[in-house]
Image 1 (tube, rainbow, N blue to C red):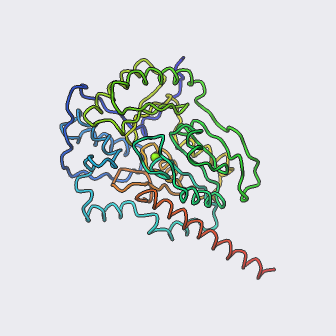
Image 2: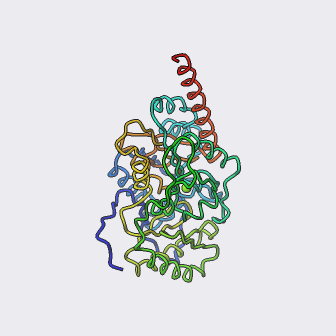
Image 3: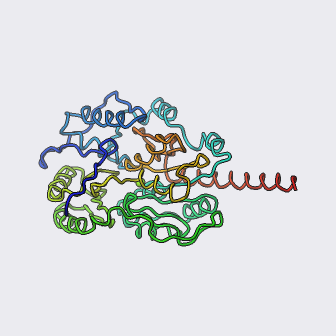
Length: 382
Ligand SMILES: [Mg+2]
């Protein structure tokens, strides 16, 4: 395939730093004093990433291990990315840097007064727990009910790295927008809730269609080459690939990543990024979850509107693209799902999916109360 002449923005790409030889033994992280500032600009974010590489134990060779662990803090054997991250003072500091969306709920609803909320939700680690088998990342019935309830009142989209059909099989709600493959495969609701008069729409956007043959070719090679790494699982998300290493021994993480990087040298139209216990392979086009968010806002008719309050909830580095879009627009809020301090462009935090569910539940309750109050005012006027 001819390489497209589209520039990929470096700023928000998550780098996969140069790896040590596959045979080297990774060193454990050492205590340090770095605390990530909140991202205020793309340059700042880039500096942070550079800082992370430079401050990994032993320098560059361990930086990949550091960033992997930073992205994957749920592993019981992983050392927290920030030393003493569990101490009370650091937790307090983290809460000050990125307050809880639950404790600041009134602040959020105050900002929402007179505006229409549009809800964007990542899936893994946000609506479902991170589990060893990515095919078993089911969401609970109570979470499904919370998402269904929120979609009754606000346009709601799932934005995920997963294949769109796969995430739909998990969520099973026809009234949502689905942006799969990191937003490269967007489909509208097939059943529209009452709050909209719009027509149900089919596929809305597939900017990476031309890459399908090369993605499938890379998938076949990766499946073959990763067979020697017990626990590794390659997932074909249609417009992107995921190499999961949730079940791979940490001792061979470097070797696995080196193999993946080696395979990709034969595929210049694909790029490598990383997430929580996963290596992501995507086409080299300027498209990510942030672009998907902008596309959906436009699709919903809110592109130039000041009456919209987008809320994006996600737990992964790929969600930072969407958080940054909201911050740059000065519109809405990004909410990072994390128990641990991380560098982020989000405004608020929630610790885990159960808190996401509680946040959605409270938002529905708030909206119901607001509607009743509006109805009472309408009755009095008439
Ligand atoms: Mg996620």
